[in-house]
Amino acid sequence: MITTVKPLGSTILERIGNTPLIRIDGVTAHLGDAASGIQILGKAEWANPGGSVKDRAASSIVTDALKRGLIGSARGSNPAKGLLDATSGNTGIAYAMLGAALGFPVTLCMPSNVSPERKKYLAAYGANIVWTSPADGSDGAIRKARELAAAEPDRYFYADQYSNDENWRAHYRTTANEIWQQTDGQITHFVAGLGTSGTFMGTTRRLRELNPAIRCISMQPDSAFNGLEGLKHMATAIVPRIYDSALADANIDMDTEVAYRIARTLGRNHGLLVGISAAGAVAAAVQVAEQEARAGREAIIVTILPDSAEKYMSDRFWQEQD
Ligand code: PMP
Image (cartoon, rainbow, N blue to C red; front, side):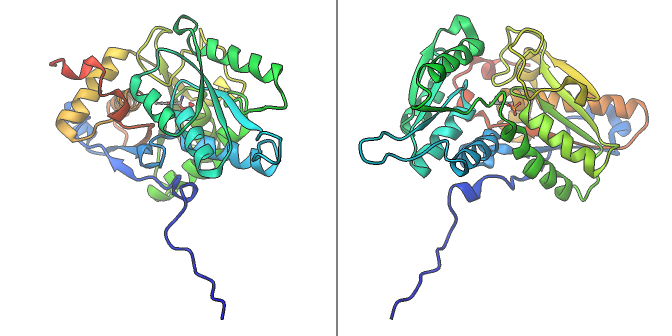
């Protein structure tokens, strides 16, 4: 008799999303009683299997490309058509993980000064890396990916996370609805950093449908020369096609040193070791809390913590005393 074994556990893909919402108490203590009606909550995106928020966008992009036959496995003498993109880190790690899990080659263009931790993750997942000059930043990596895609269109599917609508749609379909459910629909403010802008665009669009009164605030580095890894200073970058600046109710320009200081505080006083863009997002959420407290309003402010401190532990700012 043939019996069908019911598969137990879950696949890597099924583990993406449904991340915890963590209460960050105490960062508004300086506001005293005025902050008693204010809560800051952070979505712990490091709980995704690839360790960052970018698992969501990458899995959406990959699932869509597989469905449309744009990437495929090797057949006979035909090599597999692989995925190509420019990424400074987390999206690359997510693509590399998915390529390894689902069986397609992954080629990534990135500046050679990305952190040693990131290089090790990508090598461990077996991705091919094309290094570009650190002087050209992430824009140099984008130009290289475009060049390779144009030269060998049959070899590569150019995923182009900066222009691919599946990037923001991932957050429209998942992140926003999770936040809505986890706050019982009580969220009043949403704060997120801008890299490709996928997280901010997709989450904002869906939250506004659920409740148009929710205020959505973007955060970006205050200059092109910043330490907020993963984020872009839109005024000086190649602006992502998916970015629409009109969507934000307000934008906060974040000073790197302020983000470093909050990163240390979250570690030392809250037991939360988060990445630098996450620390910048919390710092922006605190600014929103200050405004609301001054106006005498209550607020439930949700922000995104894109990754943990794990890949930034060799940075020197952790050692400074405040
Ligand atoms: N923080 C980190 C650490 C990231 O890697 C990224 C992605 N570049 C972001 C924030 C920004 O996310 P998004 O691309 O969705 O704007």
